[in-house]
Structure formats: C-alpha cells, structure tokens
Length: 274
Image (cartoon, rainbow, N blue to C red; front, side):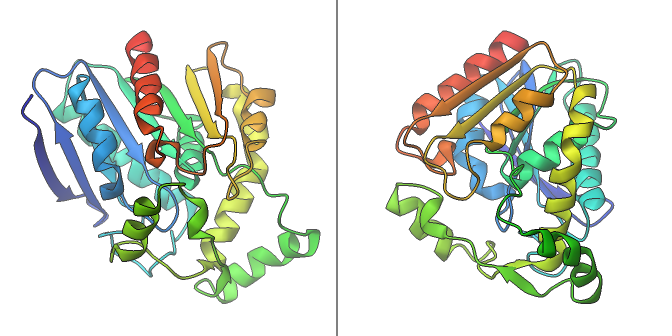
C-alpha cells in the first residue's frame, strides 16, 4: 500500500502531520505525550495505515514543531483545542469514516478531557495508553502551591523524568535522547499543574463518557503507575471498555520489543468498533 505523508499548521500555529493510505475505512487522531511530538508515532501510523486507517497527529503547544515555550503546554484547554481543531480538519479531509482518538500518557489525559467534553460528531471511541491519571506522587502542599507557582513561574523546571523508563528497548531510549524535537528538561510548573488539576477533576467527568474505550498500560510502567487505569475502570460511564495490562512492559507499550502484539491488539479493537 502506498503511504502519503502531509503536513501543515492549524490556525493556532500548531504543527500537524498525517499519514494516509488508499480508501481508508477509519481515521485515527494521535495525541502525543509530554515532551515528545507527533512524529514519534510514525511507526504506529505506518501500522495503522497498513490496516486501513488514515492517521493525523498534532504537536501540542510548546512541543515538537509547534510554537510556545519548550515543554509548556500553555493550558489544558489549549491542548484540547488543538486536538479538536485537528479532528475536525481531518474529518473534513477524510469524510464518511468513523473517527477514533489515540492518546498516550499526558496525551491519554488530554484525550480523555476531549472525549468527556464535546468531541466531534464522528468520534466513535478512544484508545487510551498509560493515561496520566495518578497524582499520588504530589504532596498535599505541592498540590496547594502548584497553581501559584504555575502563575508566577510557569516555565520553572519542577520534575525530571526518567527516560530509561520509557522502553526496555535501548534503541528507543537512544533515539529519544537524540531527537531535537523532544524536550529533555524538567517538566515545567505550568504543564505539571495543568496535568495535576485535570487528573484530579477527571473522576467527576468520566461518568459522562459513554463512547467505547480500549485502555492499555505497561505492567512495569514506572512513570505512570498501572493503577492509573483503575481510575477509568472505576468511574467511566461507558458500557464498552476493554482493559489490558501488558505485564513487564514499560511506559510506551507501542515502543516496546512486544510492539507488534500491542499494535495488533489496537488494530483488532479498532476493527471491531469501526
């Protein structure tokens, strides 16, 4: 199958790119995680295009090729607006097919925020990978101070992420460190605060989410504990939710040595729901 790559910018200036095949049966919107960018999902897109899905990905504010202070998503609303704008653009370019949202880590949280709001009408469900829903690492004092620090020093580096924990494949880690579009500094106060506040509020939003979901997580994830998936399990209103924990896998199941099986599971779920 011939794969076509396109790229452009939204009205906000955010960069987006797409991978397209011939006569797609579905459309997948990729929502990337913190400090990375949509281009890191090219292998995922290649697999999905081969299965009959066109794939679109937007770089969040402050990430990848999008404008903004590096590592600072500006606000959760801005990130969600970017996903919504790309989803509607992609749906216009690829008419008459079901749309799915695939979000990983912070992107999983952004995807849930979008899906529990007012998603585009053709959105049929979501694939949520390692959603950033665990805030147990933050103390009560940190939670109280976070909004103030975010307002006064939004770009202050607050939390260093362990890059060795993204994958057991050393080549994935090496490529991550070498990629100039990734942000290698500490998580900024603004991004961390937006993540924490959104995650804290998510249980109250999830009962209204009735679209089908596939929630997956690496069982050995040290960046986002697998228990984060339980937040979805305990609160979501959807009657059609599939949960899968991949024992022994790290934070990015789609970039682990077992990636072929993970992607096959995602394609099978999409096929069953399109």
